[in-house]
Amino acid sequence: MKKSSVLALAEDLISRPSVTPEDAGCQDLMIGRLEALGFRVTRLAAGGVENFWAERGSSGPYLCFAGHTDVVPTGPLEAWHSDPFTPSIRDGMLYGRGAADMKGSLAAMIVAAEQFIARHPDHLGRLAFLITSDEEGIATHGTRHVVDWLRDQNTQIDWCVVGEPSSENRLGDVIKNGRRGSLNGRLTVQGVQGHVAYPDKADNPIHRAFRPLADLVDQQWDTGNQFFPPTRLQFSNIHAGTGANNVIPGQLSADFNFRFSTESTPESLQAGVHGLLDAAQIHYQIDWQLSGPPFFTPPGTLVAATQYALKKILGHPASLSTGGGTSDGRFIAQLGGQVVELGPINSTIHKLNECVAVADLEDLSRIYSEIMIHLLGSGRDD
Image (cartoon, helix red, strand yellow):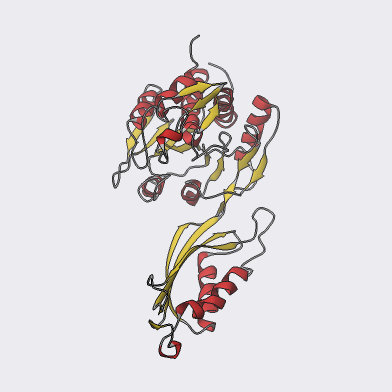
C-alpha cells in the first residue's frame, strides 16, 4: 500500500538526526519542495543555525506557517523500543524523535501547501514559511534572527500558525492563542565565610536569604486575567556551601524563573524582587535574562479561520489556551500580527518513544490546508 505524502515526508524528516541546533538536511528537503511550488526562498543562517524564509505571492496579507527542524536529544537509546531516527509505525502510531515536536507538523504544512496551491495557483495574498533549527536550544540565532531580518525588510506577518504540538487529549482540542512571558534571574547573596563554631565571626548567607526567599515565593505578583493565570515565581536551584559541614559558606546562589502574564512586565517584576531584597538588607546581586515577553492573540480573523478549519475537518472547535511553556511565537508576535499554535497531541514530546498518530498527521495537513483556503483562497478551485 502506497504511503501518503504526509507520512512519507514525516518519515524522511525524522530519519535525519537534527539534534539542536543541527538541521541534518531537513531544510534542504523542505526548500526543494517549496521551490517546486514557486516559493522564493531566502536562507538566513546565523551562528551555526540554519534558517529560511520562503514566500509565494507578490501582494496582500501574509499567512505564515512557522516551525523548527531541530529536536531534543534522544536520551538513552536502549530505552527506546526502536531507533529514534529510524521511523517506525506500530498500531497506527509513527514513532521517532521529532514525530510530534515537530517534524510531523512540518510535513503536514508542506503537503498542505502543495494541495492548496494545486487548487489555488493564483491565490490571494502571500503564503510564507519561517523555519529554524534553533527552537529547542538557546533560541538566539533562529526565529529571533529571522524576525530581525523581516523587520529590516519592513515585512509584516499578518497571520502566523506555529506548528507546535498544542493538542492535549485529541487532535485539535486546544489552540494556543498566547503564551506567558519567561524571565530568569540568578541571585547571588554575599556573606562572610567562617567556622560554624564561631558564627559571630562570620555572616551566613543561607540565614540571611532564608526569609527573603520565602517572601519572594509568597508574593502575589498579579492576579492574572481572563486569558492568563497569575504570574508565578519558581526557584529551580539553590546552592551554598563548601562541601564541609563545619564551614559557614561565604556565598549563596539561587536560580529562579517568572512565567508572567500580560498583567506584569519584566520591569515591574524586577522592581518587585529588588524591593523585597533591599528591604531585607542583604548584600546581593541579580543577573537577569528575559527569554521572551508574553504574547496574546484575541479572538479574531486567525482564530476564526482556525476554528472553522477544525470544525470542517474534525467536527469540533478547540478551546483557547495560553498555558504551557514558551515558543517561537513570542518572537513572531513582536511583528504585530496574529499568532496561534496548532499541532499534534503533546503527551509524548521530549519523552522516550515519542510518537504521533498517522491519522492525525493526515487530518492536520487537511486542517492547515483549510486555513490557507479560508484566508487566501482565490474563491475557486483551479
